Image (cartoon, rainbow, N blue to C red; front, side, top):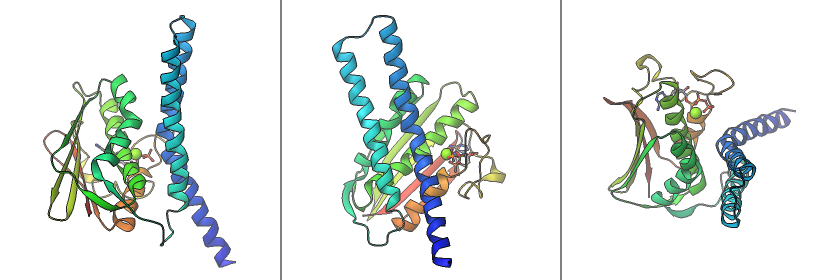
Length: 230
Ligand SMILES: Nc1ncnc2c1ncn2[C@@H]1O[C@H](COP(=O)(O)OP(=O)(O)OP(=O)(O)O)[C@@H](O)[C@H]1O
Ligand SMILES: [Mg+2]
């Protein structure tokens, strides 16, 4: 019975994680269809337009399908690691959100100073970057920041790959900064946030990849730092 219980608990947490990570691509997919509908109504579609929409939709569907695999294998100790470039994993995450960032006029700066080949889980790594960018986007909108900006920088130090993701939304409340990685800790209302994003991200980086995920505030806003070892 205890075995059964822990199996069910795992299943529950797997489903919660998949649901959480489906939100962004799902909303992006719905955006593509909405745009296509509008363009059709105003008779502004041509073949290329449709083909582009199909390609974009397929990308989102593929990401969502990979997400199922990522989290189905999440707790497996013997899952296969792969070599991947940190910049590729970041680019993949950016691809999911770039239309949204564009629509919200959020300025995105992507600096690759020193890239690194890492042996680990590229998709899981992308999910982390996606979560941090989604949070930055949410807070930039919530606080109505005037010139919203997200800056991603890839550097390296010895064996470490260091990625920082920084926004200009005025930072995390100092009294909350210890809690933000806790499961179900959220300052958003329940329709907008469950408080799972940073908890999942921490599990991926620290438990699954032996790295470190941390945060601090600087003069402009929050700075998240992802360290993994190659
Ligand atoms: N860039 C940021 N600037 C300021 N506060 C942030 C930032 N990123 C996260 N936070 C704070 O940390 C909290 C926890 O983030 P987390 O991603 O775990 O959950 P959430 O975004 O609230 O909900 P979910 O990710 O489940 O939709 C947020 O509610 C927010 O208060
Ligand atoms: Mg979040």
